[in-house]
Length: 167
Image (tube, rainbow, N blue to C red; front, side):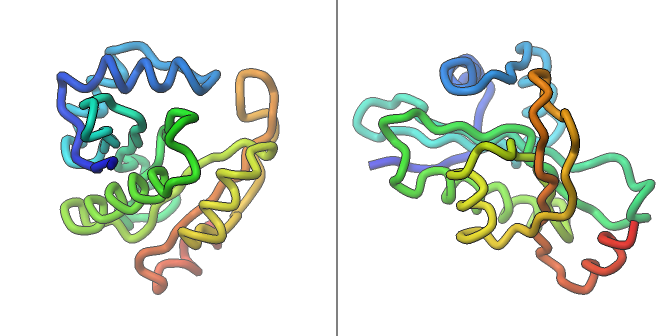
């Protein structure tokens, strides 16, 4: 069984390993630590209860740039990864919902944004079909390898949708 819980400092190396194993975008330890220290309640981990091993994580933050949306608090998914053996079990969905819950309950977020590779059909399906994210835009050559990204948003507070999309 896999449990979801808030990340701790002693989880960071395993979170980084999960990232290195699965994703081409990697971050230095300072970046991981910055997220955890700044937005303590947002990063979440998936732990295999039988082994104690971290099998997935979501690294998220609250956005500081209120230029576009005025004072509308919103979160952003920086990175999410689940080890291959634990995919198709709902782990990523549970991680996302846990960070969404913290964004709204603790930080008062009205929405959450993320970027996803255009080619990542599985992630796009989860975001759109399971979690109800909307595609807002396409960011050309967003990734280091020049692949485009879809800019997606999940509105927790539907009343801000028009204002956010208009910007």
